[in-house]
Amino acid sequence: QVQLVESGGGLVQAGGSLRLSCAASGRPFSSYRMAWFRQAPGKEREFVAGISWNGDRTYYVDSVKGRFTISRDNAKLTVYLQMSSLKPEDTAVYYCAASPRTYYSSEISEYNYWGQGTQVTVSS
Image (cartoon, rainbow, N blue to C red):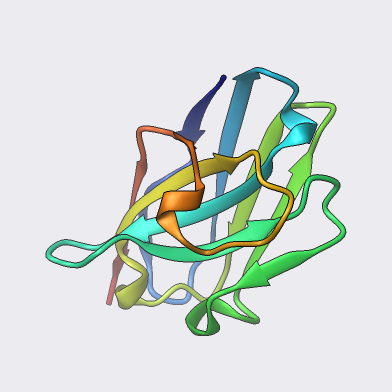
């Protein structure tokens, strides 16, 4: 198993930036594909970005392409989400998730482990 703890959320003005971190512990971190999801009030949880086990492949939902960057440091057991040019519609609770599968997926059901979430609020 792996345990995930997110940090770095907060309140930011539109156009600003935040960097989220997700610290992992437990089973070798490098064996997991990692992803960030988000859930806005009254909406379903959605995939935001994903990264392969060694970081050579990344995936983004269209709405964040060019603004968000996912990365990982396997030595530090941490995955990051750098968010820039933030918009009010990016307001949500952001969750870090881990999948043991070897293929890419944006489906919630493919991710076995989840953090508790961190709130990101973007004011207009």
